[in-house]
Amino acid sequence: MRRIRTSRGWVVPVWLLASVFHPVHAAGQDGAAEPGSGTFRDPRDGEEYCWVRIGEQEWMELEMALGLTRTQAEDQGRDRGGSGNTIGATLKKVGEWATEYQGRPIPVTNESGFSAIPAGLFAQDQFFHEGYTGWWSASAEGDQAWVHGLRFFDSKMGRDLNAKEFGYSVRCVSDTPGG
Image: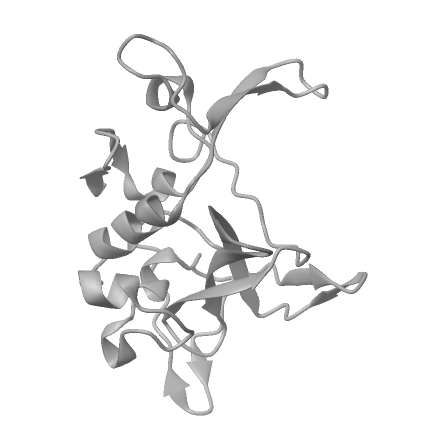
């Protein structure tokens, strides 16, 4: 499994980087939680879970670990990086995404283990775009925040500013693949 070192000094599996972290990853060397992290107790099972806010720096580190150049990672838009941006294929869960669109093959490999599914988004009291998915970044600019997303008809990962009133997925995982 591919692992990368983040700017916070964590060595984490790629599938975990844009996720909720296990306490071993969320705690600093002295055991204190990093800024922008914490815990919550789930009333359904009584267990305590850690969370971390993922900002633009961590998203870009994930994207570069999967193959984007720094210039491509810093670019904005749904078509950033041109044909060189195929990292979406490594994030998409096999069997959940189209593998062809208008006669063109669309790679779906999930090599990263991230297992993204096409969840759509929520706006104006309804769900839209079931063939898309996106995740908020903790980095905001005014009344907008950065969204990183995938589309059903290509292998790219987009990056755009979007109104905070839209609803995107929350990524929750355990500390081990398949756990």
